[in-house]
Image (cartoon, rainbow, N blue to C red; front, side, top):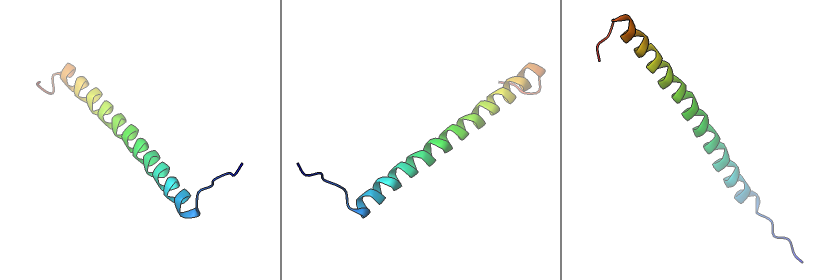
Length: 53
């Protein structure tokens, strides 16, 4: 039974895909936090009467 392995350039491509997906996910999560913070600030301003809808 022979075991097939990937060449080094094929594994590097896989590594780059995983890294880019991880970075994209991190940016998405950080961006969602900013959106959530903006909503909280907007709601706070609306309650205080500083902003209209």
